[in-house]
Length: 232
Image (tube, rainbow, N blue to C red; front, side, top):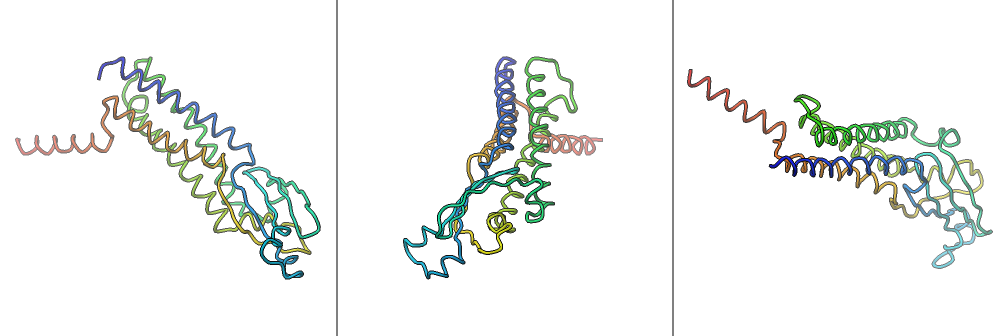
């Protein structure tokens, strides 16, 4: 492939990585990862509510990795509330899983910025082999994409398997009991997904620039070595 086209492909990949890093940084600070609705079971059972009457006992909230807010309803009007994960909810949330989500999110930001720098260096500089060349680009794209995938898996497990929304709704609520009715991932979660997809796309851009996948290259080299051994 002509050198000019390689520069264009690497520039596109570099800009894409930089935008992804900015997107992840902004996503980390927003309370827009999950939107959930929850039912006040205690109030609904007391009045034997059904049908549209249940709307008076439905609350909702949205939250992220650090903070969130919502409204509780138990038939006596709305009660707004706000919360912070650190340090308010530490006794309620699965701390080890949540810290791993933050750890891999931080790694995703750092590695994505490094990948952006490497793409620009390969576009305009004179990279040498090893980690500064195509191997380093493949490696960074793979590790960054893996971090993004782990962030989504860990956060989804925290929400679904550990019933995070229900724990937040019931936190320090001695009188009423709440049960989650629905949950959906919102903007910030899908930013992580787009970033993961962007790293997959970057891997394809490297291949389009004319560089073989590392495993395919090593396999061809191994075949050549076997052929040389047979000749001698």
